[in-house]
Amino acid sequence: MSFNEKFNYYRETFEAFAEEYFSKTDEWDLTLTEAVKYSFFAGGKRIRPVLMLSVSDLLGVSFGKVLPFALALECIHTYSLIHDDLPAMDNDDYRRGRLTSHKVFGEAEAILAGDALLNLAFSILADECVKNPFDKTARAMQIIADNAGISGMIKGQSLDISSEKKNIADEKILYEIEENKTAKMIISAVTVPAILAGKDEDIFKSFGLKLGIQFQIVDDILDVTGNKASLGKSTGKDEQSGKLTYVSLFGLDRAKERAEEIRSECKKILKKTDNCDFLKDFVDYLSSRVN
Image (cartoon, rainbow, N blue to C red):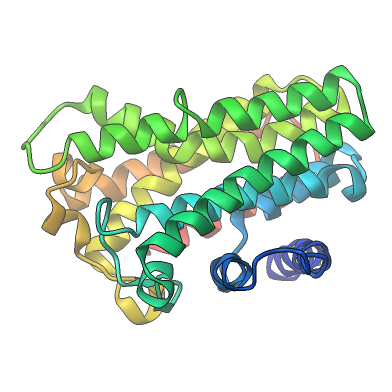
């Protein structure tokens, strides 16, 4: 299969699993269910589930074992987007080409939808630990929890907000934002299958870190060079908000150069493992978004 065919295969496999899971939510509050599904099924690329399934394929882990973890991770990612878009955070009106949750359901219901998705993620993970009470299962849950929490994504979000409009020119803080806000969720996606397979997770952790930073730099670039029609969200927001980004600190040209450098670093890490053509192509796919 070509890269696009494989990407779509992984995405469709995940989508079918998620749709089946959410079809069993009749007991939920009707309005809250609508708000949750509005954001979760908003047509995203499913980058994290695709990465998780691709590494599972690489390591011989059955999709049945890893899909619940992919679903939990995507629930966390979706909750973070709902909350990021709120007026108190990034104050965005559009996400994935349509109105954000708080614009459709109101701020209170959007907050609750995000809360519901976060708690649902840990319900799914806890259920896996009960069904499969092994060290590997608990370790996989721990990685997701740590990388999404106060020492991971939330830390990165807090640093991102606290640095706004302060003209901070600190590369160390920028790296902390990139590593925590974006990379640690990518690290979860690529290391969970390694943990479940009983394989050395260090290579995948290193790869996930580099890939996550590349992802964030590309996102910084697209906020300047992209357009709302192709990205499905407002552009120019980083400059308006006075955010510390790779572009604001080093300029657009250097940001593009750094994205290319990290692409090479990702490829170098992948040379340490076999049969990872999809991951190599994924690195190129990220770079192609700004070329």
